[in-house]
Length: 334
Image (cartoon, rainbow, N blue to C red; front, side, top):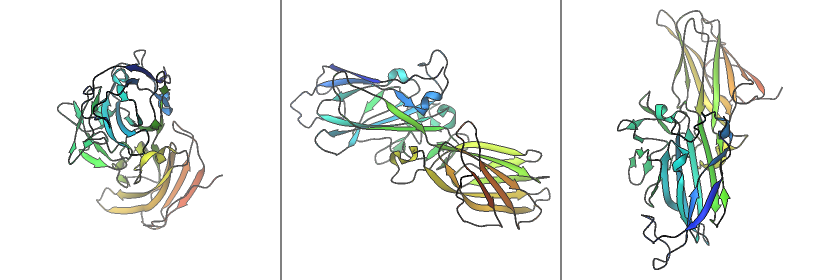
């Protein structure tokens, strides 16, 4: 059943000033009031189907970075981070007199997709933590209070993929992202992190493909292959979201121009370049690209459409390529 929107509830609780390791109040001789916060999610992430035991451990990975700032200032610094595969452990203590920023990202089937250490107990980008160096983050289903380390790749695409043992800025992962900013905890308060997809789909269909292998390369993404008699291949990719990164890649209008290179290796070993051109990909939309395969690198054609699918419907566009061009392709409404 779909995940219901889960609110973050608060209850005041007592504690000594050392109860949150690595976090020092502005006034060390005082004991600030603590608020116990239980985290939850809403938005597009609620479309994910789960079993009746919806809060049990899954293969999905959730990374959460929390920042704090004195309530009267705008000076956010790392406060706590956590890596979870179960929503049961998403509970954190917040201090009175501060405001907080929550940054969260989830990778579907992350335990299989993301490179790990120690037999799957620690995971690399986008979930690694950084200070002077970068370290794999332990999957502990709890928050670690640390003002010196942070998960600083949650808001961009950079990812270590387990299957390919490499890093990519456009990994083939289903990814969600959300933020809550300037939250000031109060008794009986509530908040929910609105998570949105930060992905696009790409589907390639061939015409006139009679032998050999097509190599399809999106810049900074794993290579797709079509081996005859296959006629189509598709995957979902996460956006790069270049600096200044942040929440902008959740916008409904977010796009990236990504270089697409396609070559054809024939049975005799000859390699024919077909396409080398930028294509505009939109958030939450699958673009279908028809590749016309001829026995020449001249006047190759690409038909590109954005069709109704498991992501979202969109406009239709047509591209005709005459070799190794490098002009962005922008969609136009029908």
